[in-house]
Image (cartoon, rainbow, N blue to C red; front, side, top):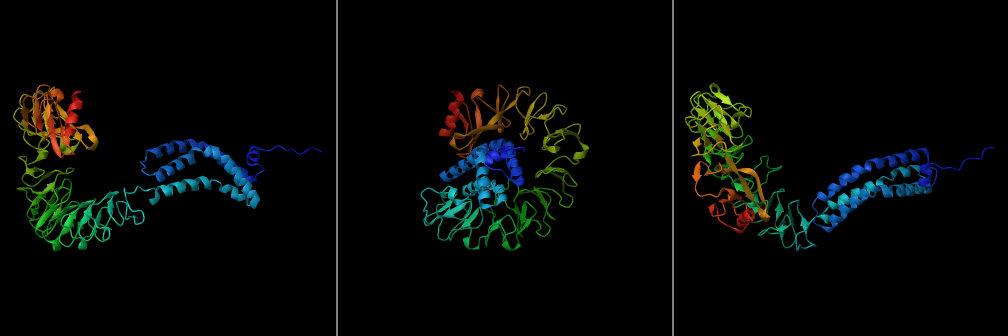
Length: 467
């Protein structure tokens, strides 16, 4: 009689007993899951890119990372334990639930990391009364906090959040931590379910973020399209680069006011471009040029923004560089050359070689001369002409220079401010830009300042340039 073999397979040896058929299949599926582990390891490295400011958050991050990193180490002991437990409880399918342990562990760490326990708290807060109102605002018995900084002047007893951005107490209304001057807390309504527009309002005015529109007639006020509002007395432009509350335009005809695009609007009396009336435009025949935003026409002429041009029919002109529309295009009627703003260029401009020196900047050059808008730059050499870099100074002495200046240029020998020649400039040491810390434009070289006022940040920029 043949003796029965006592040899065991890999699954039985690792689990410490002979699994059922289902258990053995699941065992090998778990082994195959190790092939995916390198992907999980790689993804977990990005967990360290997330800024964490609390010890609880750091513990959770390491908990998630180690749960993934150690998966090949604890997988087989975990399966052996669940196999033993399934035999002891006589529940064979219990073995198939062993992956729930690492999944539940990861979920728990993620839940704690995203909970209030791991959230950064304000310095000196009162733990017994601290309450997170929403993602932006919090308060305790002593203070109200905006992004964990004390919100000066806020009353914690009456303070309430109106949205993620707006909040109020009995005396003030805030937008992103800034007081909205003149806003009435008792009647203030933030954009949301009770306010279908993207404007906040109280009983006497409307607000774009923290800027009042100074609405003349609240009863007739209405939103028109995406970038306009109107009441019985005024037009309010709300779109790109809007000067909210400034340069309010008297409305021509309230009932017929309509939006033409994000920049143009019209009624039966006037055409509007942003915060300006387009002088002389005929609202009955005015339309925005097809495919354009800043150009329009009526029965008499073509318009660039709010300015009428000498061009009656742009389609009758010869064009170049029209692939992006009019923004970089030049035109000629055979005698006069027109730049992208449809301004006539000086006599002698060479249409065949005219070009924009830098996209979105107002210098142009042909084979013979350089121009700013439609004016000659005296003596500028088009072969060597360049635009200075724009330096943006931010907090912590952070300086960016990945853009071009709007005002300063040079040709190797001469420096220009727009179309004006600047004298005595040291070109190798010249720097211009905008200081966002002090809210001022600046320009200087190693000898003197041409624009702006010296401050420690700008002086550091000067010194680092030359050392």
